[in-house]
Figure 1: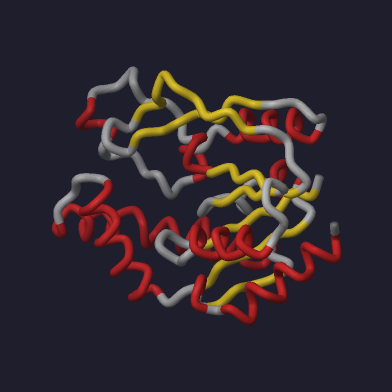
Figure 2 (figure 1 turned 30 degrees about the vertical axis):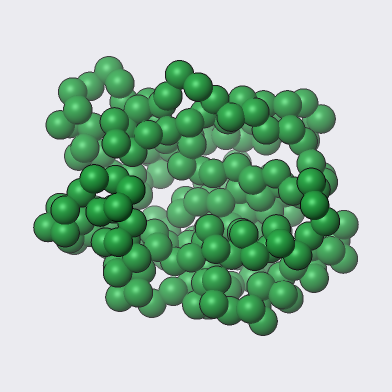
Length: 201
């Protein structure tokens, strides 16, 4: 099994990059795990307090469980990936069954921030994107998918997203083996990255 980590700022285009990589690899050979699934459960605190959680801080991720699941998959075992709801800021009762595959991709803003997780990654990528484009994508996504209005999104961006990006996410670029500028629009970089995976396999 080859384990690939794909990091980058919120709205940088990580999901699009992952999708385009999968399209170029043999069918049924790739499993994808989202770092977002491993946000800590906050059901024990009131909803209003949950909405104040800084999801861009490394402490919000249960990295211990994530690395444990990676070890299980690498050993050939199936895992139950948590399902996290941004609307309630809690883990759901249901889980997603993930089976071991030849290629395992872990995608998320903080994937390269944790030393133990980094050691498990065979290839590390950072999806880079201009901050104004990331912000426009975040506004669109948070309004449609997370029930926030424009003012809530902008306030959150100014108070937590941008400072956390500069402190915790942007610095992890130095750990990347490859940087993919312009996210999913950069077909050349994605093709080079995909060809490297094929050679590795």
